[in-house]
Amino acid sequence: MSYDAIVLAGGAARRLGGADKPALSVGGRALLDRVLDACPDARTTVVVGDRRATARPVHWTREDPPGGGPVAALDAGLRRTTAELVLVLSADLPFLDRETVRALLEAPSAPAAHGRDAAPGRDGAMLRDPDGRDQPLVAAYRAEPLRREIALLAAEHGTLTGLPLRALTAELDLARVTSRPLASFDCDTWDDLAAARARIREHGSVLEQWITAVKSELGIDLTVDTKALLDLARDAAHGVARPAAPLTTFLVGYAAAHAAATGADPAQAVAEASRKAADLALRWADEAAADSAEQNGSG
Image 1 (cartoon, helix red, strand yellow):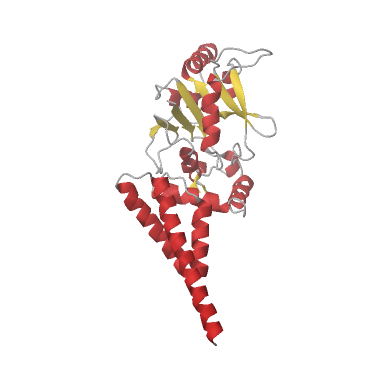
Image 2 (cartoon, rainbow, N blue to C red):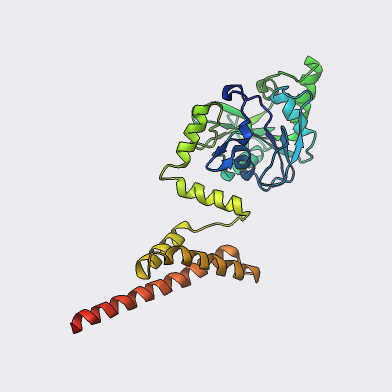
């Protein structure tokens, strides 16, 4: 699905004392980078805000004058895009995931329901958080109606500065996509930031979050069978020696990369290398157990 992405990263962050909110980190990664990771396949990504280092290349722009509010910022970003579908995101969403982005992008083409079936072709789709609140800065819009409404607002008010987003979205026919529990969580305050950092370290999610962070840091996009690798590490640690666990998983990664370089599917290469190493670890453990039983019997 072809789309452009606009990330609004130029707010004043007054509730954070004017801190550089997009640069604040959760799980060792800047909030802005975490949002950019949710839309890696955007044809063009425009960040509206001051330039800064980012994990992947983006285009930069600013509303004129800076600080003109979300509608003015959105207009500035929209002027740098050409796709018919535009993903619009704020830069403070630490748990936004690619599945949520995909759902937003697909929703405008799904049949609309107004008491009856309707033809596809709505003006966009907006995320609705678990409390039932609409999130216009976590949304996908068709560019043509978005540009039309912005032009009408500019003609009516003489400026876009200071206008609320509801003035822009009120006349658009938008589908609603129900948010996953954390997908719409944003960091407006220091308490929000502390809560996000605590959540990312929770036992049930820390491993997934860590793997995602490492892949982003290393610049790789690979589906990782975490269970298989953990099972391999366990078998190597128990059947050989504890230091064998990290060394074995490293060698599996190296072997998979070598296989992928010769044309193999990367995910399948990891799975095959893991299987071979796990089988070897089990054979090693069986052999050690057999030797131990034999020694005990002869004693």
